[in-house]
Length: 370
Image (cartoon, rainbow, N blue to C red; front, side, top):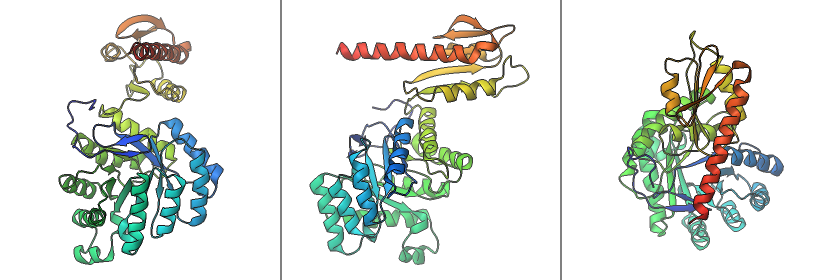
């Protein structure tokens, strides 16, 4: 199912990460990664809960030691969300988390060690029907590739990916997804595009080490947006030096902008100017804060004057046009009533919540009627 007919999705094999389908015609999933100390079980659980409330479909947890593996066991027992364990070098840790019920392993077969160790991990994943994620990063390419290519580039990333894939092919294992991440946008785009026609597995998209909240959001929107518009990408992670919850919010905003995923309030707002009849920026910021808990898709337009306000309000489910002496509220594109500035935010919030309640009730009736 593709919600945007203007985008033709790359056809891929579908894998299951817990109860979340990745690839095929599944919705593009949004994920993040905890940045707490994994051995601090309570702190990690609290962060996962916040990520789940923000809408994360999948959460990745770093498991760098056997102590962390034991902590992961406790975390797994108390979390319903699909969990990916991020593991490097030590195959024993991978075997432990597979035993404890991980939903996906993020490994690079090439750094796990001997063929016997790789086979042990893959055989266990096969037995438990657990997929893998191969993660190629421009910043951690092998020495042989750096000698060959002199510096990280897209060709080196693709060659690294194909090397890892070849290991899994020889072990007759196809249940994996793959990422090719660089902090440089064009390198990332070139790598994904080059590999897209060579394999059938789904892609995990990301611009690695993208930066802080503002700069990282911009880089991720450009890089991931370019690929997603080409139909490339099945699950995404926005890598920000910020609260992981912000990664989830940005991820959904990118998908909403491309009409690939609809969750929560899609807020259209003017940048404001001297024509505004109320403080647009303050109203929008307050509304966004108050309506963060809403998951039902709804279009809301908040425009400060009558130049563009009526046009935007007519294509929104809830709209507001600034006017003097009172602003005009719209419902489903039709003028509804006037609102003065003193009660603006409260009334808009009430209108949005009433509309969401009505939509939810209608959806329940549709489901009940079969």
